[in-house]
Image (cartoon, rainbow, N blue to C red; front, side, top):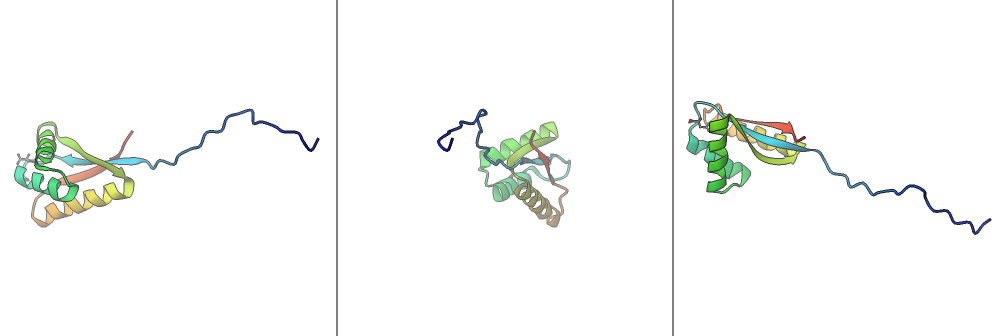
Length: 101
Ligand code: TYC
């Protein structure tokens, strides 16, 4: 009896904890200069000129554009910070966040 070995009937799979991700979204407006949008994307989201210009143009033409994806707190911090920098310069530029499906 002491030697009885049992094998589990169900396979257990290791769950890797993956935090939910949030998108930072650039919202278009009619007032913020294109060059300023590109400058903020480069400075706050470490994008190069080409990537920043493409994201800016997509938001300009479609109304909004996903900038990047982060964990919740980082996405919110970056969106708030970038929006505040624009406010400080007198522009209504807005960055928002939303959960990734
Ligand atoms: N639409 C602005 C303009 O024509 C430029 C702009 C682009 C503003 C993207 C915001 O998220 C934005 N000057």
